[in-house]
Length: 389
Image (cartoon, rainbow, N blue to C red; front, side):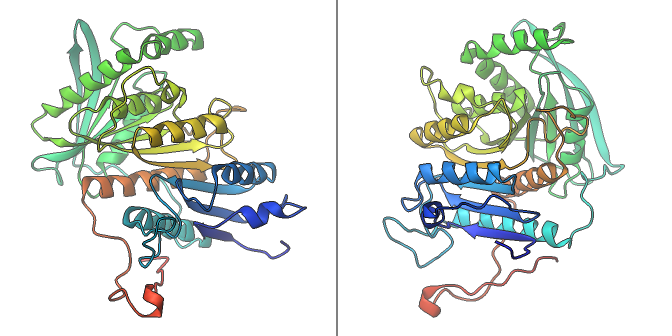
């Protein structure tokens, strides 16, 4: 429309009437769009979702579209208890937090974003360990002022050029969070691997993903190693990964490794999820996928296939696509046609991950404002949002 808006937020909003219009919107201007959707909403068919995302992409909209698994229509309404519309506490909480951060950013209430600064109390250690007859390396970091006993573990899995300053930076930032995590940035490639060129990296990755048992075995070895650390809570682990690492943690989730509560994939390839010739046991492992909608290597059809596969496997998942965003959106040095840093997607994905940690590790109370008992006004809660605290 011709109305100037900083942003719009849509919760389980229907698309059919918009799509029936003869003329679709093509100029979103500077309006940012946040859409929060139940992946199993019978009132919003997947075809409508794909068509609308295509319209936003054509209009070069700055959008963020999130699908919540096993979630129907009206997931924010506590009085919705039907077969087609049902309240979902998890989706309500996650969408509320997404809105909170979105409003802070759009209205400029928050200070300029950056990764958390490292305190002087960070303890850092380079380590090596064996997986069979192959030696692997890693980097362990934690805040000694916060981690005194068994702590939740966050694994940072390498991207395709090994563990370098990027993984260490992300590990340090994660260890600097207030909650106090034991963080382990781990290699997947064994010592002695050569990955200077793109061709060499592709060959190494092919060795792991040509047979999915190989990447699952390697990721399991990484998990089992860090479980033995004296400060690790072996029952409370989340694995994160970027690019190749993002694909790797998805296979870890499908392997059903004990103690892995969740995985987070940043611009990770999704093709392996289409492989139904391997066992798939997500169990209680939650999955958070954060992807660029314009990533040439991760098509919309690949996203839809991943969602369909996870649904068939009864996985608990959340998939967020960022508009006007290509591959490597978290890497500040990325600057090519299909690998480019995005400050917006970097911030939004980091915030989503941090909230996911707290929720999955059980470290946070409900973020929903306390407004008294549900009831009156048709059973709906009246809620107000404090955009800045």
